[in-house]
Image (tube, rainbow, N blue to C red; front, side, top):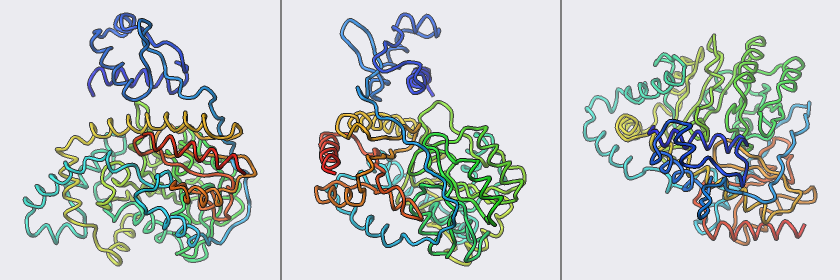
Length: 469
């Protein structure tokens, strides 16, 4: 990272944590240069970068000021109430009806599960695909199918090492995206009828997997900023024969919540005492906005209890369908189960991503992607404050590309979904994120697409629909 980028990230962190408040003046170029021991040109470059990220704005003859994203900021939602019962899961029809309606390319994609493909280096990946396939030894087409591309596994293991996790390469199983990894993990540690602790709200695909495998859900409340409620989880583990937990410890979908390091360590210690395995869904790990990547629960794992699942679908190559799991003590069982099902992800896709990780500037791409997403989040938050009812609450995640909105009680988000779709706007209604179809006045909106006049008009129209309830 260049010096001006590092300085820009330091100022962005001050803005993000509220040390520099909206409307407040940032240090002058001269003062910043003297205080931080950097040249004025470095400060200018950093401030130009912060301007492009939508975090500060220049005022003629006055200097730079923190951008006032919202004159009337919306409050954060409260934690969901705990429900002690276990639940059969039956949400697939509802989910499929919602997802099936989002395919029209002319629809404003607030309901999408992916950021804009324009944010990904697809042309550079295509060159990596061409180069890696051309150089691939014939025997590798067969040999790499079961174990996974060795270069890719080395690159993934290296990224674990940089984050402080010393991971044996043999523990990695390359999968068809993170969803296969999560499915395999769950199948290795459960049988039909077992109880699985999940988040409330939870990513709807989690609910579909439980439904398919005939597992029962135990919903654990999630704080919109701090993540899983450990008191509720402790009570559930003491009262119920839970066989596994499936949690997102960082940038949880749909809330965007991230647990702090101490809380992640406490979560691991709790599960270790009960010997309940954790399936850690960490697909948004690279999309943090701060200067330091969040630690995973896997980084505290002492005896292989955590199955850590990742993917390149959210940060680099959605259509390549390449994910992985660091399976801990379950790695061999996961690998064997994979051989009994899909055998291997695409060998050329694995080779292409391995080549890109080695030569394509992955970290440079990630910095650019994070900056774009942070600016787009600010745009959506400011627009929501302008157009949505004053009682609306919204999360303020430190990364990812989702916002979770809690509307006034009289709003029916399924009806909101239908009315908005009729006007060419998609969203993800709250009930698809719960085994018990809770969160009827909530919705998840995606800010992962470049903000433009159409986005602003769509938010204004949603505001008018909300006012009609």
